[in-house]
Amino acid sequence: MEKEKEKKKKKKKEMEMEKEKEKKKKKEKEKEKKKKKEMEMEMEKEKENKKEKKKKEKKKKKKKEMEMEKEKEKKKKKEMEMEMEKEKKKKKKKEMEMEKEKEKKKKEKEKKKKKKEMEMEMEKEKEKKKKKKKKKEKKKKKKKEMEMEKEKEKKKKKEKEMEKEK
Image (cartoon, rainbow, N blue to C red; front, side):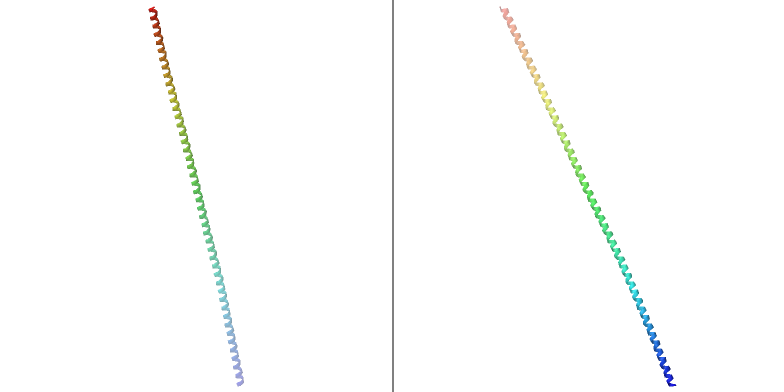
């Protein structure tokens, strides 16, 4: 009977130990499961973080590109404005040169006109002098003729006188 009791006790103990073992095993399994889950979550988090980082990087890159584009545009605009300014200056210079040319021609014309007028004046003066000379010459001639006439008359008178004397 004592033996039986001992046997039973032993069996009971073994069974409890088995149970304990089972419990431990279960606990271990649970732990493992939890660990695995945590790891997976960690990995997920990592993945998410990477994704976010990539997204941010992309955004940054895009922003930079846009800024560069803007800069390019700005530069282009400036260059165009400078070109326009250059063109404007060129045009102005040309206009000024044309103005100068115009002025030069005008002065030339004026000079020619003056010269012509002077020549005409001189011609007139010449003509005047010529006429005066002619007039003087005529007067002189007339005077001479009259004197000759007088002389003739005198001579005639003298001859008459002499005829009378005879």
